[in-house]
Length: 424
View 1 (tube, rainbow, N blue to C red):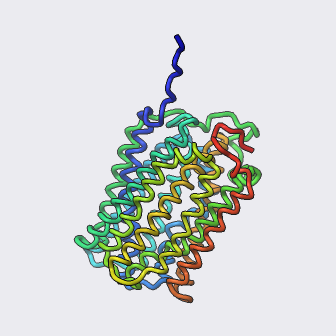
View 2: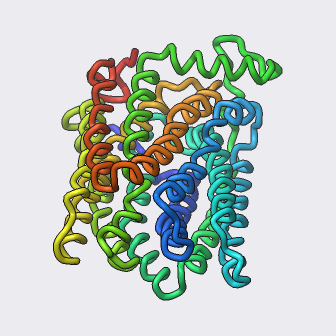
View 3: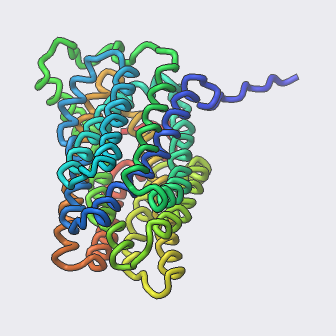
């Protein structure tokens, strides 16, 4: 009688991962409301210009320019779960100031700029502690599965979130709708608090002999060096930085374009992007199968192309309201599927090849360059939207974003089929 090999446990078999997934899912749904509410509040209530909308978006991502410093500090802090909770609480408190100011008739653009900046600070802290905490939740063979499940909930939030957010904004106004996002962060913090703690990977030996007592600047230099010397990490960084730059040039103007140029209501905008986000759900659900069929590297490259290309199609939107909504939804569908194919595979690859002793340092260096391109893209988008118009800017950014795939095509990533394969 032949013994049957035990089935490989999935990420879902980990109670700690399930708790983290619940926390992330709640938070993601709240975020989708804010992503519509903040720019719509600026555009409709405060008559913000394209440049001011670009600045608002840029300030959310500006703190990531300091990710290399925060990451070096987080590497020396063992209680990563505590940092995640603090980050959630910071964002909850900051967002609650908007409905309070609205009730007191004190909402201004400088206030929204401050809210954007401080929520960005909370997001930076969360993202720096995230990698080291994530690897304590599931074994390495479950990274793609775990990332797929997290991305699936993120994709689901893009389906229901914009529609719910649009409806809440029309009924309650944008400032009051932000309460939902604040409550989602409070819920996330509570769920994270209930996850049993585990040993931090920061206690693993450092093959380079890096002492935790080393100065911050030396740790920062080592994080940058580790990132830039690694052929896979270097290529992935160049690719994601390029695609983020151009998608943020376009993405900064999408709400403004839909509201002012297409004349769509908050509810119609929510329906368009909610319906289109079904593509993200499909992409997240299918990513593991596609990866097994054609390989991790090829799947990621396809995702990199599909993510920005549809943004150029948005520039063609016109005609009746249903036609405008349908084209926006179709573009969002393809783009959402693409970003899931890209993110799930590249995130799993990054997690696999990053050494435990330097996860936060490398994450900080990576975020400084990668996410640092987002505020730059937002500012360029605001400037181009004013200088050449919204439609030409969308077309230019979407087309140029496809070029990000060349970084992966020219690297070892295109030959990587599975995480078990030897990576350079």
